[in-house]
Image (cartoon, rainbow, N blue to C red):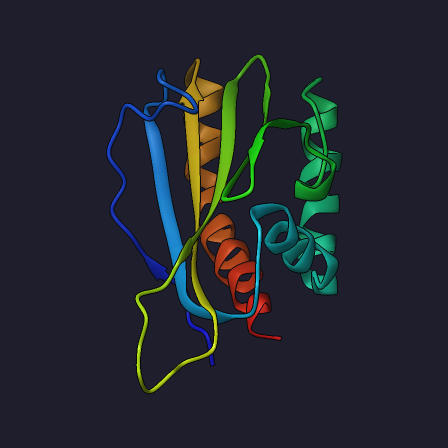
Length: 155
């Protein structure tokens, strides 16, 4: 079973140098050949209904105050290489980037199959009090969603 764990992340980060909030989670030993886009597609293609419901509630609430809505598979791709894909949006209350990175795992004699370590860094530049409050409210849900999405790479 693949279990996501929190990883260190230093700011500033090149994907969003002005970020003042960030986190990073990762999983190890994902089997098979894998690019960053393939990892993103696997994770978003198996999103459980509870995540869709949470995003629908979030989108309904933020639409009331005139903010942008969307799901991770609908956010624009801002940069892409085989080993990394960056998606994100800029809005009045905050700018964010999601950086998904795929790296080869250290070779092991006990696990000869091709393995990868996959991480997701979330970077946020909070512009105002609403941006700070928004991150405070969504962080517990964000952490569960990212962990679940990374866990989907096990299948």
